Length: 180
Image 1 (cartoon, one colour):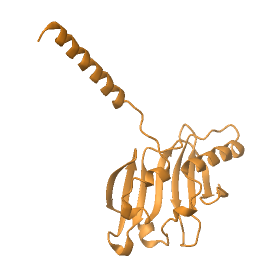
Image 2: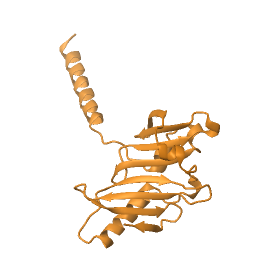
Image 3: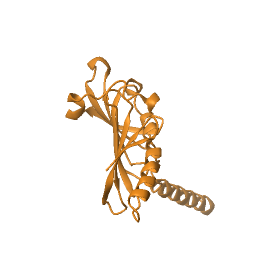
Image 4: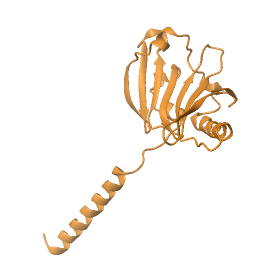
């Protein structure tokens, strides 16, 4: 290999190394709950009974879905989505879903997504807790009854992880129904 080819090869290797380090440190793709739901296999899309996540700022690193399969095909399953990809599917051990009266979430009624509820929580914290700033939230979306509206529950924390309060928001309107 002559000097010119060796130099070109060295330059090409450096470019690939630089690109590799850029992609290795690129931030994770953020996504709302609705965006994360798109990663679920089609057979689960209409069978979600619970969505949850922690460390939402507003988007969390992972979304957790609990699905009740049609006609008991697979029972109750837990699915984890990160960066638009389905990471895992396994039987759910969530007894509250198994024994509770949770219906499939009617996503036609979910007009306020997780990002919208985060903005609502920011406004509430600003007004209800002067001097405090919302750092992160833990999300939960459920629907208690076939004809009920889905409800977002947000556990709110400041930037140091101190609990600020619980906010419950109607997913259909964005109306706050509980602040404690």
